[in-house]
Length: 456
Image 1: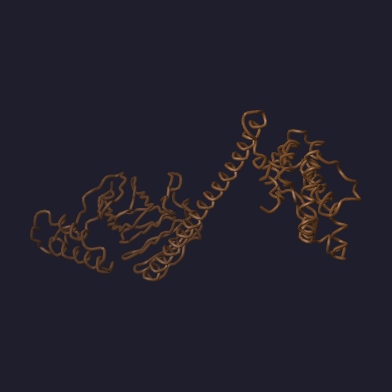
Image 2: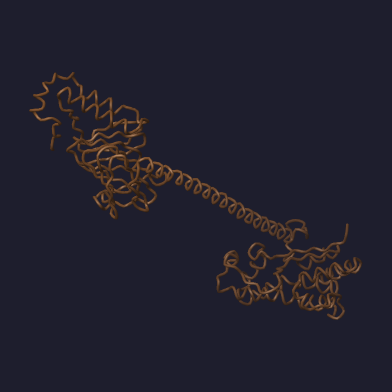
């Protein structure tokens, strides 16, 4: 390993007739320089160092830095000075990290001030490029990508091959001498008092050291803003997932509750206890249930009530119903059948009442049915409800179509629609799938439940 060149020739030292310096003078002086506050201006540091060298010359001896290890890896928890080989002193600020082997130094985090003695050549590898030096004072500050730091692999520290690691930024400032700042795509020379930055978009500079530092700090503010926004976005996504999970749990509980009620009703029907007809799903009413409803003068029904116009299931609806995209036409035909049956029952009377066929069609069967219901006198409506309950219970026969008033026709259509919808699905999907879909209140999301009862 080459030793540093002496600052004075033997002839110059003889002519100066120096006195012997105090013991450990060099080490004490260098310790003073390295321990000086980093809060002072860098130019002050350089002046102190130059003054120390001049003092050493006047005292008549060569200032020799002790030889450091050829390899090492240091991460600083506090400000720390490190000997890097025979020619380099590095002062690491808290959080800085360097590793070296021979003349190659890798810095992937934090701020480090380097002093390279004359005769020493070093290359500092950073996430944004290489800093090549020979006898100079300079500072390197690395802002890693995000919070995870920067991982620089050995293959990345080949001179000229280092590019900017995504999200990382580097500031190089020169206080004495010259350095070369380069990556695989660009190279620039920096002199005393100049600085440059490097990031994912390339190298920027050279410019005045103060301007370069301000640009670097502004980039840190932008990164903090970006990280804060990313954190907020993560929180929004987390809350949305919680809401989705809660909604899913709610639907699951509602489904389980319906199934439990169905089991209770089935147990009651099989002799396990009294059956409450009001707890039975209206789509599962038996003739005995209707007899009980007829005693109460009550009608209950549940069915799909799609909106007017063409209807097409979404991919989410098909998945919720356990159907494939190939089953969409079957479901569309069944829903269209419901729309047609409702309109055939209600449409002509609604058109007659409104006096406008186009308006009646735009309103649709459900809205027209509500108009008919609200315009029917109460006494007539109560009689119609009782008649429909008796017909479904088998207490009275089905009257001929011409003898039914509009509300009776509508109630008969509504109480029979769930069975008609299920029968239409059965033709293509089979009885089990048809029954499951016809009873799924969440899958299609267009279910209607109606109950007509006399005033208490």
